[in-house]
Image 1 (cartoon, rainbow, N blue to C red):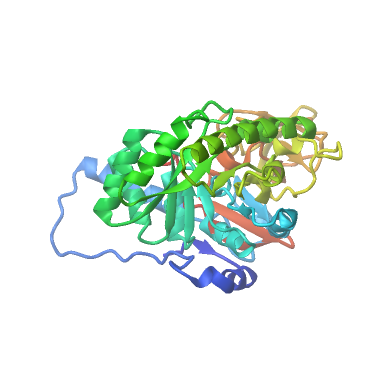
Image 2 (cartoon, rainbow, N blue to C red):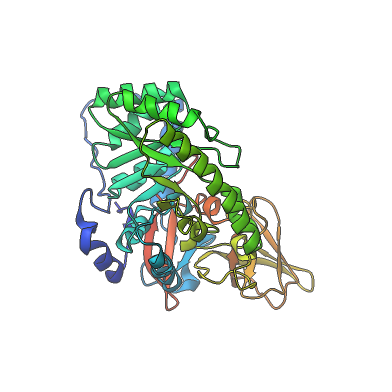
Length: 430
C-alpha cells in the first residue's frame, strides 16, 4: 500500500512546523479492508466491474517515479514541478502583499488540487484555501486544511450533505446566488448540526454565476441571516476574464470596473442595514489591483504557484512580459519517433496537456513548435537534433486543467526526484 504523497525531509519539516499540525494529518493512511468468510458469486459482469475498479486503483497508486530517481527515469508523460521555483513563488506572494495591511490571501486550490501544496501555502501565510468543486474541497479538508471557501454554488441534496459534513472538520463557506439553494443549505446544516458561512456571489462582469449588484444582494443576505445554521459571511466579486487582459493598464481599468460594481453591492447592503466586512475575489493576473482598491478584504490568486504559457503572455507594469512569478510546472514528455528533417513525435497529446488556452510551449527553446498530434501524440517541428528517448519539457497553456489530467505531481530538485504528491482533488468535481 502507498500513502497519498511521498515527500522530502525538507518538505516534511515545513509541513510539521507552526500551525500545520492541527486537524487531520496531511497524509492519508491506507484503509484496511475487512475480510469475510462468506463465499461470493463472481459473475462475468462483476468480474469486469472488479477488474475496471482494480485497474483504476492501480493507476492512481502507481507513481511515475521513485524518490531519488534521475529525471531520465521518470515515466512519461508526467506532471513535473521544479521545487526551487515553486518555493520561490510561495515566498514571493506574501512579500507582494506586504503593503496592503490586513488584506488576506486565500489561494485557489483549483490550480493544484493537492492538499500537500495547500498546506505549504498556509505555512507561507494563506488564511485558508478556495476550492471550485466539492471534490477539491474534500481533498483540502481531509488533507488538513482548516478553512475552505467553495467559491462556487453547490446544488442538490447529496452534494450539500457531503459539503455540510466537512463543517465537522473545518470552517466551511460557500457561494450562493439562489433562494432555494440557500434554504436547502440551511436545512441540511441544521440536520447535521453544523454552521456554514454563506457568501453571496455578485456578478461583476463575467456574466456567469452571481446576482446583479443592487437590491438582490441584500435580499439574499437577509434571507441567510434569517435562516438557522447559516452565517452571512460577505460577498464574492470575482471576474476571471480579467486575469488574461494582456496589457497592465487595461487589466487595471477592467479591475476598476469590478471595484465599482462591488461598491454598488456594498452600498445596497449598507442601505439595508446589513454589515459586510468580507469582500473576496481577484486572481493571479489582477490580485494586486483588488488588494489596493480599499474595497477587497481578501484575494484568491491560484496559478501563481505554477504559472503557464497563457499567463506568460501578459505584460506587467514595466511593459515587459510578466516575470514576478516563475514557471515551475511542466509536462515531461519523451520523444518516441523522429522523421529526420521533418518532425519529432512525443508521447504527450490531449490526454497529457490541456489545449483550451493554446498549445504548450517547448522549453527552453522557442525554435521548436508543438502541434497537437491527437490524444497521445505531440508533434515537434522542426525536429532539431532530437533522438528517440530524449526528454522534452512542455509548458502547459493552462495549468489548472492540465493538472486535472494527472494523479501525481513529481517534485524535482538538482535533477532528481525529491517528492511525489498525489493530486487528490482532481476529476470533474462530482
